[in-house]
Length: 226
Ligand code: CA
Image (cartoon, rainbow, N blue to C red; front, side):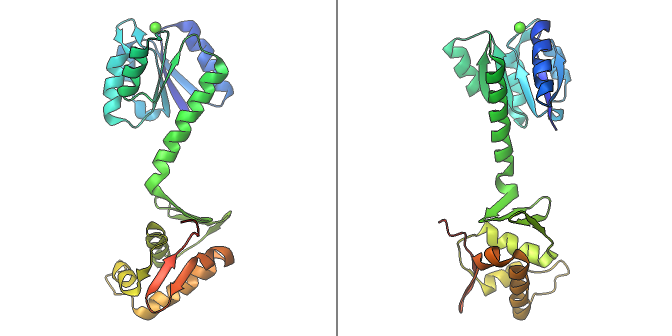
């Protein structure tokens, strides 16, 4: 979703920014009042550009509200350049503060930086990485290098658990305890061996080598970095 909400009462600035963002592939919606801002569903947008001086109130009130659910990043865009306003804005949860007049290129790069941070933040937890293996918990997608690999539910669960505990040796008992299947059937010791073997094959030579057998104990997924 590349849609930006512009809360701004200066028509010239609204026009300029909308055109600028359009060239960058963003859609924009603009509201010119605080009431309009409160009427918009910020969850529909990937970012909000917020003016502070609005005809029916102060942008601070909007920031205070959005700061509470904090999903959509906000960049304050204002002529106010006092240090105390900048500090107040950032302390209230704004992701950046840009003063008017601004240079188009700088505003765009600030926008990109905020969106990048937001993406990285969202990915923490949902996407696991180990070496060149990437596992998306939500999408149940696994990549080994640039290749998407298809795993069974059991293989996926095993890999996810190993990735969540990467560089830690997991005993066979720990893994067996974790790998109850959905029907409640206990995964037996031999099944674990076979599942590991299949997983290694599917990951391919390089990635498969990271899945180490710790003799007499269990398994460990190593990325070799730490
Ligand atoms: Ca204004």
